[in-house]
Image (cartoon, rainbow, N blue to C red; front, side):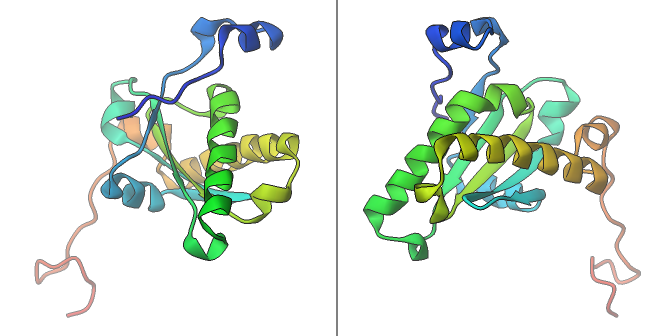
Amino acid sequence: MQRVGLVVASACRLEGRNASDVISIERLTKRREFLAAATGARASSRGFSVQAKARGEALARGEGPARFGFTVTRKTGNAVERNRIRRRLREIVRLAADMDARPGFDYVLIGRRDALSLDFRQLMRDFSKSLQRAHASAEARGHGERAATQGVTAPQSNATGHGSDRL
């Protein structure tokens, strides 16, 4: 997995944080990781949508970095526009994820066309609010920290041995 560069020491000093306070962040690179995050909690804003899911095994041990994936669909625009959106989203994560992201969670940011025209500070605020809403939703759905540490049981199958309720 690729490492995403985080807040540099000078930026940490400007914001009153120590470089040691910055959490470790990694990138999602495999399709199955994106699909797993898609089953988690969602929160949307004008410029992007966030999908968040706790990784049970890492969270149960209390370790594991936050991992981020970025995607922008073709209908959003041409390659230049999609890359600009992706770059803006990566920069938001680089600057703000250490404050709001939780270790042991996987996040996918799905870029929208409005991410190009929105003010960067507004995108940062939206990112923070979206992560908070996604975490609250994940905890309500049982995908959050409590569920991961207590162990989520698998759904029971019916009498035929299949997972479907239809007979």
